[in-house]
Image (cartoon, rainbow, N blue to C red; front, side, top):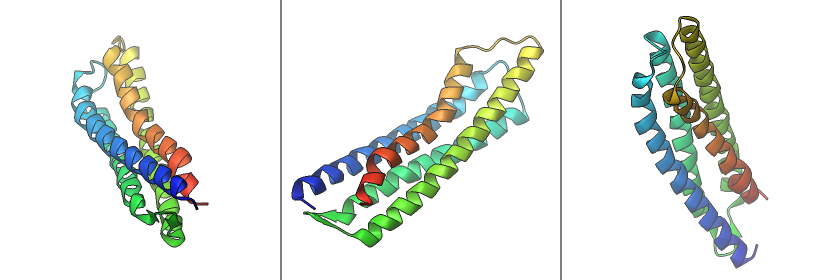
Length: 154
């Protein structure tokens, strides 16, 4: 491995990890209170959605931490292959769990919105933002895994 390759991968892992950690915290900080502004959800659906969002954000935050830890596996043209394999496996599992949380959260939000629409409440901008907040952590994990973590395996 060349020194340029290792510098590029370290920079990518560090930047990706930092962005994932910060955006995950921002999604949690903005998404959880946002559900209370929805006119079309109530009670159990709000609690379920917040729980699934928290699961997805937790694993997205974990992916960021894994990327930041992965920086230490690459040093001046050397790659700790055993640690890189472990990073690859664990980050794949984290991504899968983030997707599970995002999909279940989107399903709860869709069912709550459909139920409220049947009762006459119209979806608003907050509903669209909640859908975005639900899908964003899993999408970020997938992007991090496919563009950065996958490349250090080889």
